[in-house]
Image (cartoon, rainbow, N blue to C red; front, side, top):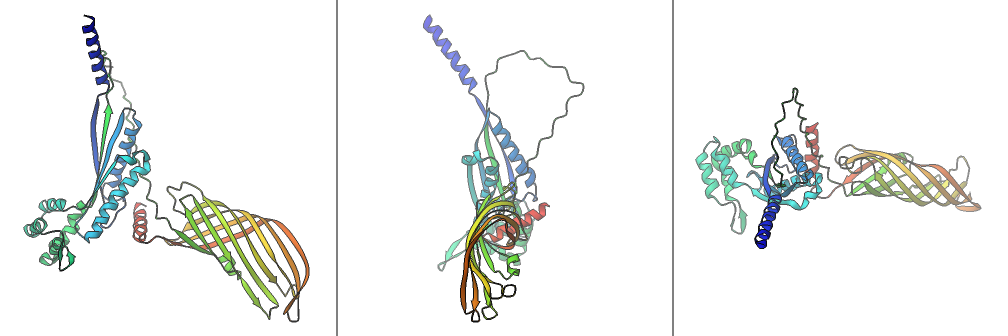
Length: 424
């Protein structure tokens, strides 16, 4: 009898635990569309803003609920038949990657949940949209789509019979109509989010229906989350010159390399080496400096190497200065070194050029020799040695900057700038 009671007790406990561990599953999906040759999210196109906001909101709601979780996020992307086959494969891959990047950028913990698939050209979808359309010569178009091979080798060369014959059919009339009206539905990425919800065991309680409220509270509107704008491609190098020095007959050049989106390092070389009036005047300076900068503000929405910055800079150089007019045949030669704190602001003019303004203040020290020029300044006679220390402003900068990018970023920069103009 005791054994029977024990078995019944264990069975009941097992049922309770099983009930406590039950879960329901579900999913939701949305489609994101792309314009021709576009691979980045454009929130101004079709219902993309509404759909991506829904995905972001729902994923956040599930992640914030301790009784819910995401099983997987499936991203399936495709391209339309118009265009070159190889590029369409690339567009399909990059469209899937761009949507994944938007979601992971908002919720990094979802990175390992993605199942990304690129269909390339969606030929099956093309057949369906043609069947549902009123394109001229529909039967002939469908025959080409169903029976002609996508690609084959002829005389050692890869050709594409399906798209080539479609373009030539009746002088391209049906092909043009399809590219203008039907094929745009194939340039899309489908996002499917699979999730679950735990069902905890709930004690049975009598149901009490509360009386209706006289003035039920209004339901708050669901917040719409707009995804952060895609950052412009990061330059690998910036080349610039301080035209304040250039106007003062002091040529210079510097390079700056971004380290991520918040930091950069730069090196500058200043090299005026002028001698004139039969060696009786000289303006010769060779100066090298290095600097490190911290770019301020929300770098997720600001372009690289733009906005406010602060930094540290230090350098050293050699000079030979003989003004002649104010001090006839007198000059100074020596070494100097600097260490400063700088601050400034930079802004873009277009996708290649920008302007930068900054000032620096700190320490400057120099060891020098004073000399006198004799025999038509062909010989320099030493007068005495000395050194100086200075604290105060050390540099003023107004530079024009040219940015160098990786190969292949030109189209992406152009696309992003067009997208931003449309959003404004």
